[in-house]
Image (cartoon, rainbow, N blue to C red; front, side):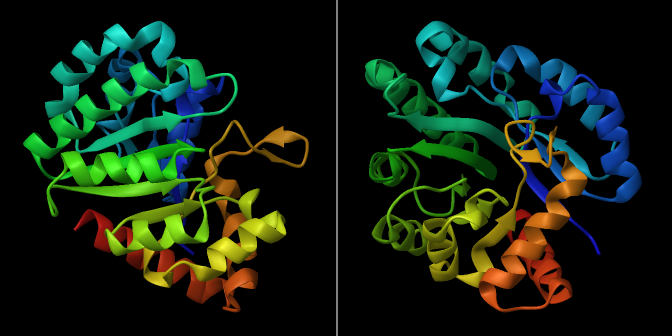
Length: 245
């Protein structure tokens, strides 16, 4: 059963290189998102020689208040990758004060991706789904980029709007253990679903989740959608192929 972990912070594990090798050995397609463009070189070096691991160029909204100047470096590096993430907006209590700066940075990211064309973005949208969607509509002409909402927590109306724009959604086990999360995932188009771990920020038992644990997400997703585990894994893999085609 081929697995997909479309959002994992591999470089935040102490055993970064070991995990990259494990993903390669097990054939787990893994998107190694980064939180700052200064982390790009190390991630890209490891991922460039693998079949299943891809590195994404990120500037996490939770770090923008302190590191917004790195957007210049981010823009210079964009030509080196097809994948972008983790990027987006966060209006949680700890980060709301930097919303103007976050919006400025995210707008530049979207504009750069639209100009480059063909980029695939993993999007953070805590308490900001409508604003994120507004910015996508304003900055990115249809067909110039593709978007995957990571750990989506917006409303059902937000989800429908995102789906209408052609967006995908990467879901993890933690989303699928709450009634609200299951209800939301049940309402999403089946052909727009991907799986993720968001490791090491989620746990499997008492240890941080790692890409191989996305098998548990497949199990939960299958139960949520009333499908077999095998069919669910096949659907997710088919969706990934459509996204990256």
